[in-house]
Length: 193
Image 1 (cartoon, helix red, strand yellow):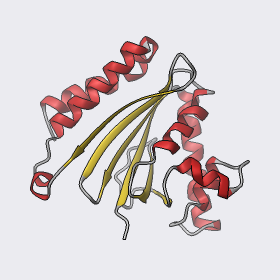
Image 2 (cartoon, rainbow, N blue to C red):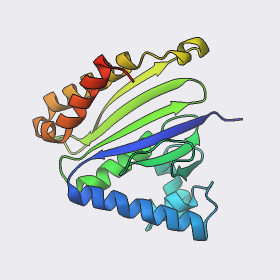
Image 3 (cartoon, rainbow, N blue to C red):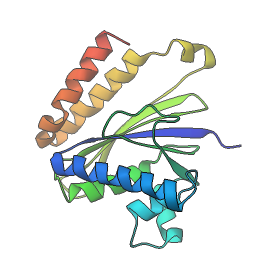
Image 4 (tube, rainbow, N blue to C red):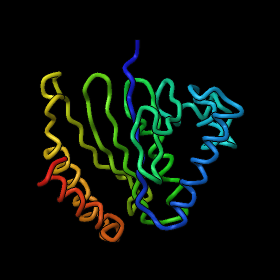
């Protein structure tokens, strides 16, 4: 049986980006409640890849299977999207979202937080670089069962902050988008939950 991977997407962008994310969330909820089984990828494919046949679009997910999660398994804040999939994080899907949202906001940052049943936890930040290609920074930690009981979140947040700083060094225009996020990372890094 496959380990589940729980994916949370957070979007740092302008009002148009946040409006688009809200639209996607509403469309996912409608598709899973009326047309498709909530535990299938069909709703994801319909909402995010409407012009592409499902067999082709499934490759953009980068995972064997996936389904939307509206807070049942993944705690979500307003404006975040959650998905459960098999084995590994939905990095290819993150890249797709980044490319789509870049058309709305040239400085959008898409963060993917993920954790697996096999005690891996990670974060990946994706943007479009100056060369028009995906630029990403990733952090991944693995725990033992004992360490999971007292995880080293301060180390995780420190690595997230480092990733954001590296992105800002490469693309200074991102600083405005990531400023509050970086301040929050510093706060929780020194005052863990």
